[in-house]
Image (cartoon, rainbow, N blue to C red; front, top):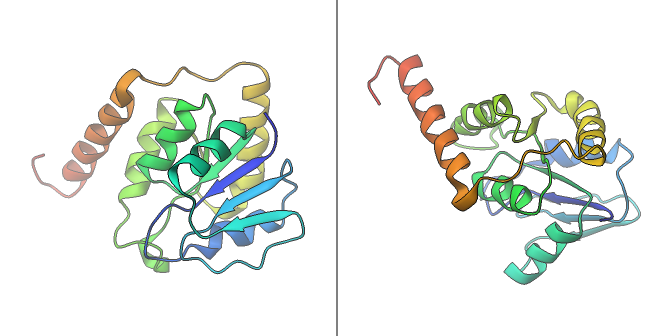
Length: 170
């Protein structure tokens, strides 16, 4: 495996905060970015594609040594199926990056299970990337759940926790 794959998914909301933070870090080259609707001032060596067709997306994921993504289930699921421990920075509603903060509840549940490395803030990305690379090198990556059952369970847990926080029955 070689390189870094950064994916921002298909959201209609831009997410420059993730890319701005990554520009300041040394990432394993080459860096392939699926930027979605986010405008990118890419550093030298980054290959940026607004969108990738499914085959190109799978190839970028399969060839990556490191995956950094937003907190969407699909992006995380693909990284886990590729045997990687993705580094995740969630989109935030208060920053106009998403309509609500469901990614945070979902990703905190996954992080508690050890399925991802969650960077709560952009400043945490460097440490999360180092930890992901070290854990992967040591073979310390939990196997992906068959048929995405782990993600389904994590989503159910996140929904239940959020409903409880809001004082509603799930």
